[in-house]
Length: 283
Image 1: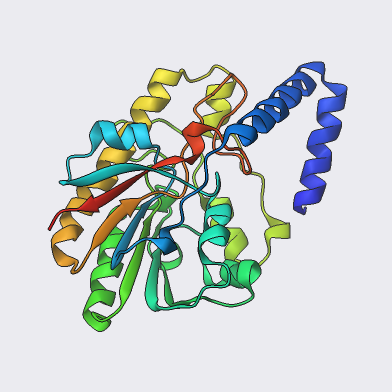
Image 2 (image 1 turned 60 degrees about the vertical axis):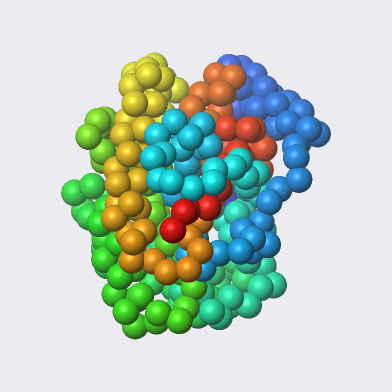
């Protein structure tokens, strides 16, 4: 089922369900409002770095609360509220042949890069999401990202690196865990080279939160725990990286904003979704 078919199904469902229709109207209204007051986005390709560490779905406020890595922290405005939007805004019409992209995110794959750009703009994409996958966790543990990065640093010390961890994005695998569906369906779709055969996500943590099965405090605690986990592995990797290293994110997470926004819907310029960290790490 393609994106248009799924959208049509959501529209039909909203029309026969007044509550869903009202939620859809509220979402659309807030998106238009925040679109009018949105600040100009920042692009990572316009900043200086030798190593760019991307923490997937990391909000600025969460990072500022937990980060202990020394450096100059500022707030960055992401050009998108989904990974694909961030990728397209930053790397369209760019030749990044001096960059190796280490990716734990199935959306950043050689297949998807061809879908977005028609070609691979990077020197190499290391698909950790493919071979470093944990069936038990339904995600990629940050340990696997560090291992892949160190291997490629030895082979290509002259290259720049983008190192894309999947955490703090769910599934939440830190010290405080709550049950939720992981990334398995996304990974299978990419391996099949077909988004049209994307399987239903099933009942995930955000649906449980939205339906009142989980409360906001529990989900936030699990999210912070996931961020703590990945930051610990970032700290382990930093001494091995030369040159200028910066830490950022592709987008944030909505956490039930206005009672209608969960996850990180695309084309949604809420501050919680587009305000991300930019940390210039001290050497």
